[in-house]
Length: 248
Image 1 (cartoon, rainbow, N blue to C red):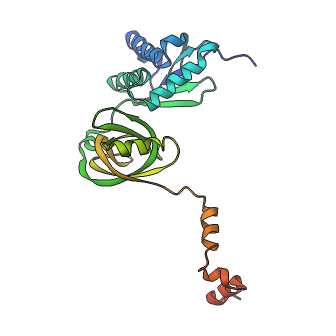
Image 2 (image 1 turned 60 degrees about the vertical axis):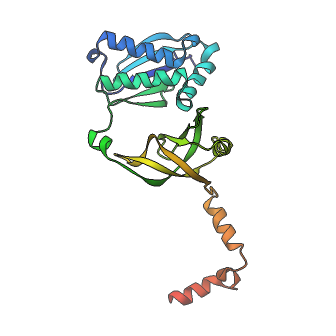
């Protein structure tokens, strides 16, 4: 099988190439190259009219490093790749484009980018209260009194919470990408089209607990293994059930 001519494609959604000024395309290309890592020697492989797909090829010897650069963009907001990812989203927003996708050579989506922000009505709807957030720890940034905890929830949204206790921060690092936690937080919550979420860096983690991720089969097995389970003590529980239900 022939090797693909391109490695990654930044696909600007619902905007054809002839609807973008050349200087804007150049800016997207520059930030896209920065996201992949200039040290990884990305080269331009053309534009695909799939909305607007900017194609880039990475030399085989640098592809693993380019992949690591993309992972940094997702997990480390202070990294250079993350700054280029944010710059791409700012360009999308300036051009009133709702979003973009980063695809690999098999055209699978690697990363999503958001352009036009949610409606002002949602942006202005905030409340201050305590609540819970379920998600996985994907990053912890900061060395001062306030640290930024990055959590990815079930909807794959990246939330940023605040942590002030060093002991708690160390404990949270031990759960890095190792399970789902439930955080109790206090601060400002923002209403979005998909529900209420903690406003970025405005909710303080007060406590957390590790959620039990046992399978449903395991839960039932544990329940039935208990010594005080009435059904398990019956010789014929199915017959007893029929009697209760009046089933012949």
